[in-house]
Amino acid sequence: MKYSYPTDTEQFDFHLIDGQRIRQAGVKSEIRDPANGQLVAQLPVGTAEIVSDAVASSAQALKGNWGQLAPYDRAQLMFRLADLIDQNDAELAALETVNVGKPYSQALRDVGRTAKYFRFYAGVCDKLNGETVSLGPDQTGWVQPEPVGVTAHILPWNYPISTFARGAAPALAAGATVVAKPAEETPISALAIAELALKAGIPAGVLNVVCGDGSTGAALASHPDVAQVTFTGSTATGRKVMQAASNPIAGVTLELGGKSPVVVLDGTNVDDAVAGLARGIFFNAGQICTAGSRLIVSPSLHDEVVEKLSAYARGMSVDHGLNDPDLGPLISLKHRDRVSGFVERARADGLECVLGGQEIIPETCPSGAFYAPTIFTHVPVDAEIAQAEVFGPVLTTHIAHDADDALQIANATRYGLVAGIYTPDITQAMQFARNVEAGQVFINGFLKGGDTLPFGGVKESGIGREKGLAAMASYTAQKSVVISH
Image (tube, rainbow, N blue to C red; front, side, top):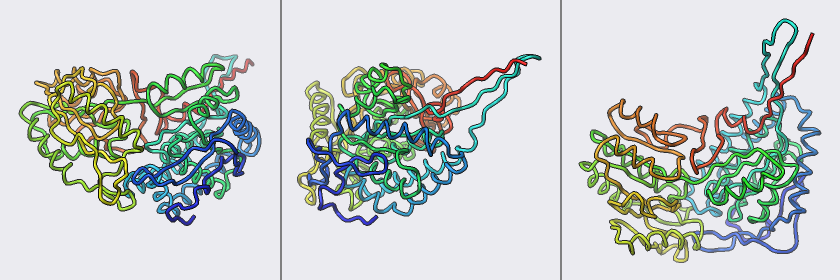
């Protein structure tokens, strides 16, 4: 795969179904570089008929060569795909950068994670063993895992390549087949990975990609031959996906919105906390479901933390992602307007913005969707900007007078994806981890760890778990067998 800045806007103009590039007449979706507005590609909007073709192809592959393949052989194909991703990482990262807007080094990290997902789950393929169950002297029972069937994966636009792998890899490891519908804004990397899968020897139909908009996703989620739907995106859209998947009934894994708290208590190393806060709210321009968008801090540390975090933000370079700046653009001008709307309403309500709060116009990318790192201080817990998922580089601060107060503020939201705490008191840390309403908790290192831990939310942040061995539950069906003798 050779990469240069896309000049042929039709080079990605296809769905990948049954190993073939399927081109479609009619409405096209424009894909633009968010840093400069340049047209990168025009892709088809998949119809219900296209979706049915993709599902039928995956269903056939499930019954045929993929379903009959020994787990060890399945693993070798997935290992080969991981190797091909690594070998093409520079080109894939450049595609991701131009499509999403993120800095090149961040995109390269995402590509590396993509390979790791396929490699990790390849190692799981031949270890999905059943178990026997003692039922008495005249009965024997056993439980055997089986692939759940055709799985649908409706992807987000903020981490398109790694999220694709996060769902597809465990599904393939279980012996299931995949139909992916990438986000309308960012479909390119899914097509690239699916073509590499064919090159790796994964049979046609095992991994299909259908491009399109919300109507395409709805047709996929509600298709009668889809057994499992995995969706990453907003809570509002997640509700629609859940409803679509309910008739007929399919399994659903939903990774939805977040409004994650980061607590900083007395005695904390402020520099460590600031490093975690910066990573949590400015990485990928704050367009991350796990963004640490609420700083809950002791009054004695508030001003120092805000000052140091502001100094960090002012020193961030801003440019086109291919130049690998610290901060790239938001996904689109439309989304920038959405983020700006939250900020302007907060200002209108009298809230204090001490940093940013406006668009950025770099000399190199004057038409890009850039937005400045933004901090509002002393924000009421129930303010819109403290409760809604802004999905941009916007942080609010809240004073907590003790650990109990911090916990109460942390839980005062409808979301529950991740949470973080910085404290030298291990008892405080453990009590917070036990009582905070979140699917994942970080102690003294926000968004640290790896991709082998279960990931998912509580409350309106979703249901089910991705990553690690826990993800296999979504893609396997446990069949119990009893013999009387």
